[in-house]
Each structure stands twice: as C-alpha cells, then as structure tokens.
Amino acid sequence: MLRMFPVFSSLAFLLTCPTLVWADGFGINATRLIYLQDANSISVTVRNTMKAVPYLVQARVTASVDGQGTAPFQVRPPLFRMEPDSTNQIRVVAQGANLPADRESVFYFQATAIPASTAPRRDTPQNDVNGMARFGVGNTIKLFYRPSGLPSTSQAAQRGLQFSRVKEGLAVRNSSPYYVSFATVTVGGQKLKLETPADLMLAPFASHIFSTSAVSGPVRWQTINDEGGVDAFTQDLP
Image 1: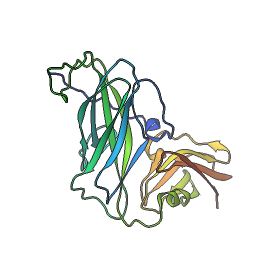
Image 2: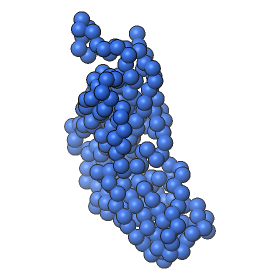
Image 3: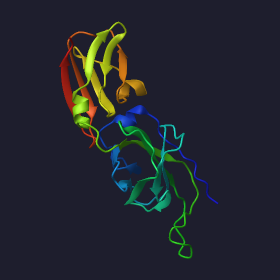
Image 4: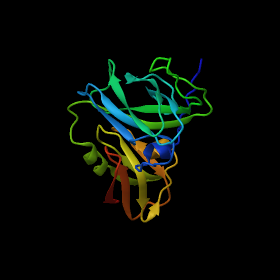
C-alpha cells in the first residue's frame, strides 16, 4: 500500500507573497482563504500543470504552519489522484468551530502532491489511488476564520495601524479584530527586513516592535488584502 508522507513548506515568504507563481508542477490557485462564519463551506482550486505526470494529493487544515495541531475544519476530498494538465476543487468545511467571536482566527491549509509512477488501472475503483511516491511538493496558505458582525473591515484595519518610535526600534499597534499581513515596511526610505513570523503578520489587538535604528521619516507599509493583492499606506511618525 502506498503511504503518503506530508511535505509542507514553512517559508514565511511563501505564506505572504501576493503573487501566484505559475511554475510547472503542482500548486494552489490562491494565496489565502477567508472563511466567513456564515458560510457552509469554501472552495480552493489546486492545479497540475505537468503534461504527463499525475499527482497523488493530500490536503488538510492545521493549527500551525509546521503541520502540527488539529483544526475544526474538514477538507473534501482529503486524498485524491490528480491527472496531468488538470485542476481540482477542494471544499473546506467548518466542523463545530468553537472559536473567538470578537476576532479572526488563523489556520493553515496545506496540500502535498506526490508524483505517481503509473497510470490508474481500469479494473480499480475510480477513486483508487495508485502509483509509488518518489518525492513530495508541499504548498501552504493561510486560512482566516472571520466571525460575523466584526466591526469595520480588514482593509480599514490595515490602513489604521499605529506606528511609533520606541527605544528598541519601531512599534506598531493593531487595534482591530483582523489579522494584518505585511509585504513590506519602510521607514525614512529604509526597507526593514521582515525575517520572522512576528514581523510578517500582526494578530488582532496585538503590538509588535521591529528592531531597527531607522526611526525617522515617514513609515510606508504594504499589506496583503483578502484577494491576495497588495495595498500601500503611509504615516508620518509623531
């Protein structure tokens, strides 16, 4: 029996990059998912752009980027064969989610594709998974669970960040119930290095300090919106 071993990418850049990279092989046709509380389910499309290689695909939602921890979501189907030059839709369904009602929660949709070595046999069931695993390709994107009735909007949250000078560098405060993901942060024309998960995403009602000596001049920041695009904002430091 074939065993599938998940291989997931935990690079923070891949989780925040707003541009879809259409390289040959397996990929997810989204950079993030928004699950509204009132939704029965949401869908995400995966693609196989190889012309002759089928994939065995395993998908799930986890509590952390490294694939650890359970999450109150099911994916349907969780395991399937994907033919060359094709796309498949995967449904994500919330299952008894008991999550905070006053702020967003973040999870991670993860899909692993393993190239199959043989074509499916006609005498096996249609949904049977065949072939031998050679190596795996992992794709991970964020899934934001958004409760109903949150005030304002996610874009307003991105625009409304509050920056200030502190002894350790540049402080930022998120007073909203939405997560904010950064693409870039620049102070006085100097681009900051966003090297840690804390640099790249600010939780609801949270603060963060960017370690930098550049604390003069305007702050310019780019954030990733719900559609995966980039919005730009500016603030003069007080």
